[in-house]
Image (cartoon, rainbow, N blue to C red):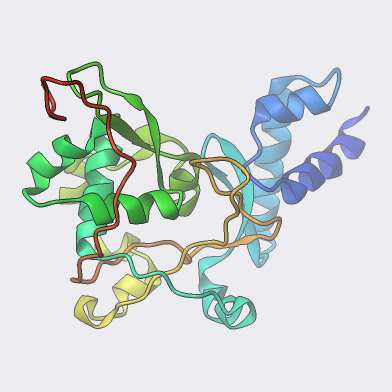
Length: 246
């Protein structure tokens, strides 16, 4: 198969995939094609979209590639999709950041850092598929361990966990690099953010519908209201210990 035939096939595969498509997966689908060839074709497609001022881009996210709409067009796409807003509160954002940087981590470890109960917050993050239970810590009580999901990477537009900003990155942050919504608005006036639609095909991971994503549709701004406190799955306890982190 020559390059002319290969290029639109790779483009079609990435467009049709419900989730970010990895180079390894493309290589499995296309026989006798090298990783180098795939990388070069993806780079060509990315360059073409940019030079042609297309309404979408091919972005590396969650260790794969996905078509996402350009940020500038998000106001019109939101009218089309009529996405129901999900309010990402300050407590939710704080807890998610702790989990992202310290994972895998238990509920009690999160609460030690935040200084407040996080039951409701963790339940919300689980419901939104931004975190999942990945096991139990080998200490008395066997508390659940939480970690971020592939959906977390997709929603925040991260290639992988190594792409999370460092403290130096945050200190050096230039407002010009912030999303348009943040740059042009008063932080205290914004109370709604958006998440892509997901399904429950796999526990802990949502599946993005096969449509180019709205690049601005990701939670980036908190508001100050705590969630309710629904119960999380109970951790196991023995007859002589309580559920604590040892």
